[in-house]
Length: 480
Image 1 (cartoon, rainbow, N blue to C red):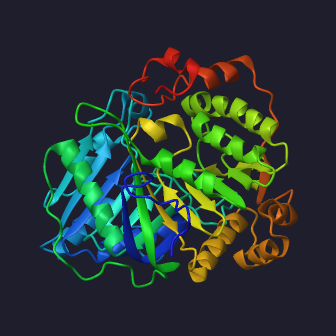
Image 2: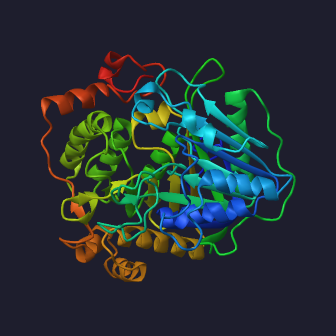
């Protein structure tokens, strides 16, 4: 039985809805990088990797790991191809724009020199409107297991869920220690994985003009040691694709966000790297103005890592949050930045949403304009049936696990307090702490003139291909 108003709707809020025989939520690099490696170890016919950024030298574990996870991706590929004669590997990465490439000594354009040549094809995807990017992050093995979420196979992605202030294992390729980092990926098996394989092959064909064959049936590639969090659920796949000469725009990611926000009864929990979309903000504001609307908790980074991101995303975020707080007449909004310690923010790169005990969403899309209409994106989502209490309990436990991580508590402790209080905000207030690992309330900043200007024009954050490089078109809001 479905809900009266289902969030997942094919050809509306998602491209496809398929059965997932297994699902695992993989939180932070120490969980998903070894799982991805274990799946690739089981590949018999096909490894297909679609991403935004890529570094062939990245290890699938910490540099000091004694369990063998220090093997770089390029060496892993070489070994797997030599061991498995029928295996073919295809890697498609965004042809990174000049502005990003000049910051990188080893950009994706140069990654091919580290990769084996035999039965591995590495391509760069430049088939986008000028200023757009390919931002999907998908790994598919033999169409039997797939990983989708916010993380690429590139540098500085590994961390534990402890996010220790100083962890010597959290090292860059040149040996320096990088800051704590929070990521989320979802692993799926069954027909849902095959559908993600089809989506990835469509992307390959769009970028290269070549149609890859669907892999023949193989031994299931689900890692033996990876425990599933849910089984036999329906999974929706939502996309963003910009309009171009080959077709109209696809805005399923946006439609799915709006449907999920409208359906919430008790709470909306969001983790996201960027929060600048006025379309999403307006939908949240409408729920805040309702007398009996849901609680809304947003977790985002205290500040972006790069100068460009701070100007393009952090500045417009200030008037957006300020406006949302002005609409919060019933005090149901909280915005937090996770901290590893006082004055040490955690880099939030996850793109995640949980609504009540009903809906779980993980993907590549940020809560900014370009993720909703200009860049290519892929999100996956699970909607528990109205008559499926087991799935609903699992979603609520996953929510507890996600939030509890941010202040060093166990999922069980958080779940018990949430059950007692019935309030997500009250539970966070009760269990949060002022020092050590904690959620820091986002400061009540008053927008300055530059914040307001960038928040109105979204100068670096176009709505779609029609207003790309035309910020004056955005002064009246999203183009129609």
